[in-house]
Image (cartoon, rainbow, N blue to C red; front, side):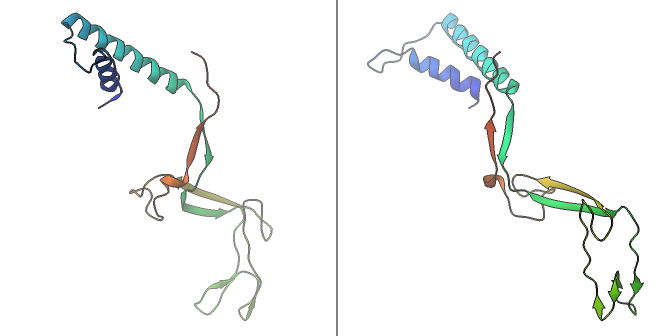
Length: 142
């Protein structure tokens, strides 16, 4: 059942007498109950859609699409092996990159984070929907 049908059922159930007997509603009463349920459902939906929510805790799978450096990386090929950026093949210099700089230049990372169950977009990690909390910030008046 949806919100409208649930509201209509609550109102219809409420129209029975105290002994649990159902009272047969007239077509006019049924129509008015349906209108009331629809009006309240619309009001609830409109109210919630105006509210501002904020993620307060999050665990997300991150898909790193690319990492670019601002300046070209230079190095010497090591006999067909990996490129040595600094130092020598037998004693390479540690190499660090970060968005704030590293070994003299910053990098530009590009990534997407996925929240929720494993999907075609969230293929690298386990579902993380239970690790995320969203809270209503402040109730805004209509």
